[in-house]
Image (cartoon, rainbow over all chains, first blue to last red):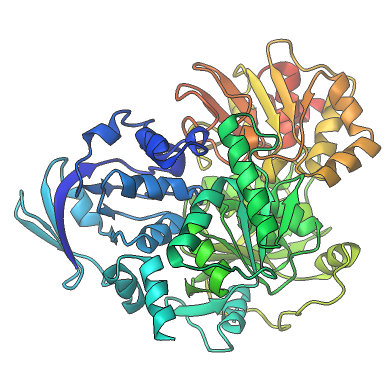
Length: 164
Length: 412
């Protein structure tokens, strides 16, 4: 699995109350997605192009279980996240939606907003093409690679189900 | 093997487990709230799964009760219809962790999954309770299984004795302040009660609840006679006793002496940004909230009533008190606590998460709130320019009376 996109850089502890404030959760997907990252970047949904990759610091996605937060990230076209570390629920939800959530501190530190970045799951590397830098991250466990490769938990379930 | 490893091992069919390993486990109980029902239902549809495991799956209405908008009412309608269609249990009238524990649904050794980051609370009786997104909960409800990465476990031995207006909440704030937000990320926490009088189930719930802000995947107290009495009183006659020796395999062990603590608060905008209440006293407060899955149980209400008895909430402060379940509401009613709160001019609501997460009584720009709730992230309770302080029900009640952050020991 390999993908390329533009880096969107955010700070530390982007918690779920920042990613999607609770007061919007009862709205439909296309409506609540307009409020993504509102507390830190009110026009976030307008600034995103399909294929963009979020770079987040420590504790990306800490906080609530909030499925709408991951649904909105996917809906606006984010294809991956590179962060120093994650809130564990959010990490799982990302993988389950088929989005590579990479933990790589060096890549976060040395990447700026707008850099063109490539992620390669097979070689466990993040390449910053704008700055000509290459970073490696610990390989994903086999099962998570399988889930990501088929595009997420739902497809993985269907595949397992058919094999039975 | 420690508690987390014991439960993971049993749920994975008896295999040996070591930290870092990924195992597939059977989940005993899956709990979904109304906030997450739209994505839960959509995932089942995408999977092509027409049935869910009704013996394992429980739905809860605890965020929008009663609903405050047509959108919220629509979501509540969806969860009610969904539970009825699948012939599953629907719990109402309280916050899910409280309802699951007081209803006797949680037993030691159980593997529990919920779409709520504070489900860790259920570890108070020695269960493995962890949070997931609604899509993963849907897969568990359809199959009964999920993958788990076996966490390293860190152990906390609690010693000493709580005194005066010092509460379990203060213990949690002290731990967060010393070790930092998310210090236990991906880990399991295990608590061993070596205090002089034994910690109540409410106290254990509070510490397991706060493990969420510590980053822990799950947290559990070792099972003892306090646990057994609590379970027996709730009609739980039989449960799988964990092996007598659940000690061992700890990545680290810490000791916490609770004897000489002082009332603590977390200041904006992080639960780990902590100070003694005395150091921030005098800060003007627009709203005071006693409630949530962390701060709305009987012990919280009793301690608040001791301070509010015969007092009035300060005229420039709004006070809201929300017992965490109908059972607690009734107990508070029969003990006369609700009358104390009402005479003190506090607003009493019931059985909902709402103020904690800004769904009720939102804060305006420039306003400050002191709260017994779980999190004080920027903007959680309303305006991005509002401020949230977190503390025990003693500290919140004292601050409500003075209209300013107050060390509750002034009321001793």
